[in-house]
Amino acid sequence: MKRWIVIGVLGVIVLVLFFSLGVTADELTKAQAQIPILEQKLYSTKFELSGVESKLASSRLELTNLKTENERLRAVPRYTLRDPTYKGMMDFLYADRTDLNRYVRDVYDCKHFSRDVNNAAQEKGLRSAIVSVVFPGGTGHLLVAFQTTDQGLVFIEPQSDRKMKVEKGLRYWRDNGYYSDIDDTIVYMVIVW
Image (cartoon, rainbow, N blue to C red; front, side, top):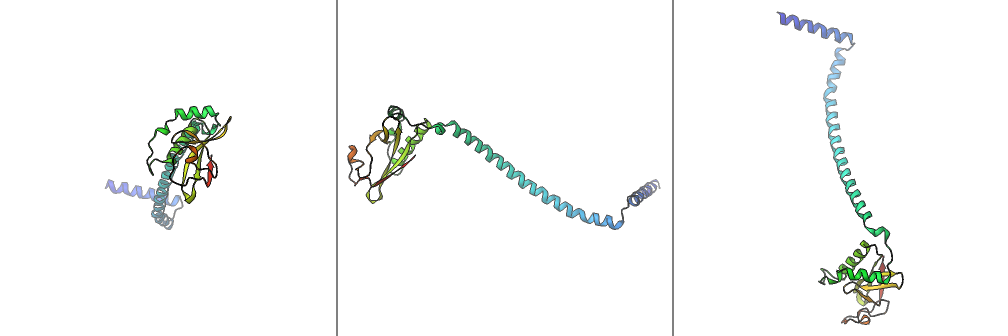
């Protein structure tokens, strides 16, 4: 019996609150009908938030990687490259051991020698260029160049560190003291700084 009295009293309290707040049964039914819709919106919003958080984490990682790469690039003296003296160029070439690498056709050839000497020079703060000379028939060769402050533009064979004569019409190998069984006449050349 006490239990029914408590339930009755609670019912009266609910009805008093219900009517005192001015909420009708129809409004209560409508509000209850909105609950699943709001729950679905909440779920969708949480799912969308999860995607945004994932993108944010990815962007933060990318930003961290870019900052690290920027710091690495700024630490390299490439931003303060200078033209060397002839002696400075020769000192660099003597210290650089790229010319001791083994030539392997299509694995480690003139493009690799040129790239490695060029990159090593720039890491030491020296401005250098990769030079492409083209022979008849489309064959060619890559070497490096330095704009020295005292002897002007100097071409270097990166496989031997030798100074080379390079100009249109010259026979690249033969006119520089090497044997060649191909027509090595320079048809044109491109210098990339």
